[in-house]
Length: 200
Image 1 (tube, rainbow, N blue to C red):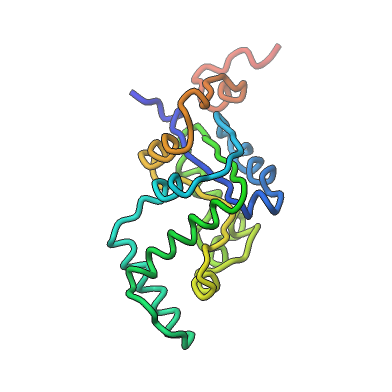
Image 2: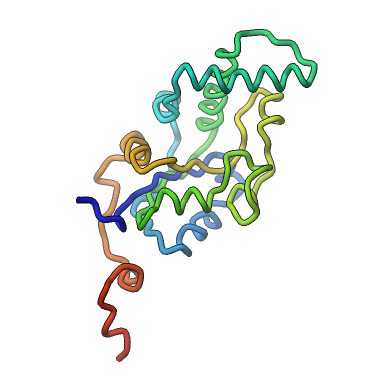
């Protein structure tokens, strides 16, 4: 049985987060919750790895492409291809963006790690992400602007949506040997039933 405090979340600081020197700020926000960093690596993403990571189906391409068609129509821009192709272009733009510079990949561990990380990261679109979140506080891009420019939304960071998704993503980006198992002193105060012995 997996213990709740061992749940893991995958996080990737995207090239914009690295280039804007926000790696330390982002890590600090996760550390303050009590989550444990069990893997940290700076790497160059490959296109193949990114396509595998994003793992979208035809339905997703069709739905997202329909939004692009709507935005282009509202902006008076021509519709030059089927909605599904615009949907595929979204992932193509993400892959291009994710491979343009170094990324920092991490694994965070702790009780409900996936939901804690998602709460700190905020919504996907920076302009509508809540104040206090990483995306809400540290960047300002929007779907509309990125769609019109035919580029990926620059939202600093990726995080897993569900625990099973986290495990899938971790397996894509990291070798199991890179994930450390160690004890943090703070885990006693966060998880142990018996906290006798704190006083001298």
